[in-house]
Image (cartoon, rainbow, N blue to C red; front, side, top):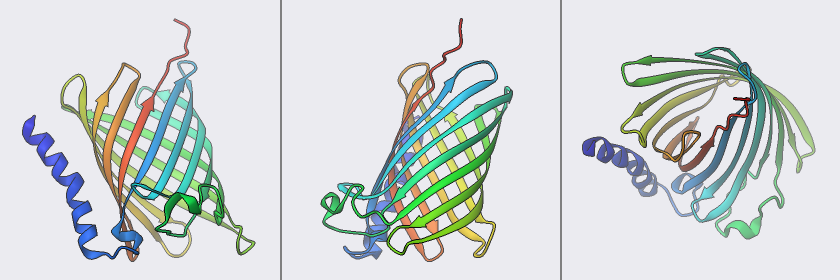
Length: 237
């Protein structure tokens, strides 16, 4: 157990040290940003649940707003190990990097607004103590640049392989890699590599403290992540 936790902490912080060593103070790639995230699966019946999600992303750990993402969807539990989802997301992005931080604006002067429709399939399986999750997602993205007064429609496919390993009844490790592929040029969009320590608070709630390497063509970003997961069950007993 001790060796596993030591390895996880080494992985989480090595990316931070490396990125600061190669970048300058005004380079957003040299900053360790942070994402605050909430995810919920609200079980309404044996076959139906409601997905709820909110994310607030920052260029720097001390602030400097980058993006707000709100997502919801209807989950269809077709089998114990298979879930189909249809949903919608609203994304408000400030693409400018400003050292002075929040005074330059949480929701002030954001330049890109996006309405997104998505379809998704999740398949799960266990191998020993390891829980594998395969997530396949298609996205139709309707993007508005408010400064340039332009609109665009883009299509994207995503695949995420996630592995969860329980350590005790309270603690677990979670890792994933997710690739984003555009259905128009350029083909490659981004790749996300993630590792986290999870803490079960109750039967339906947990917290994950993690680190994300977000790779784009010609750019790499390091992001701490604080995620809260709450999955209430509203089915009649």
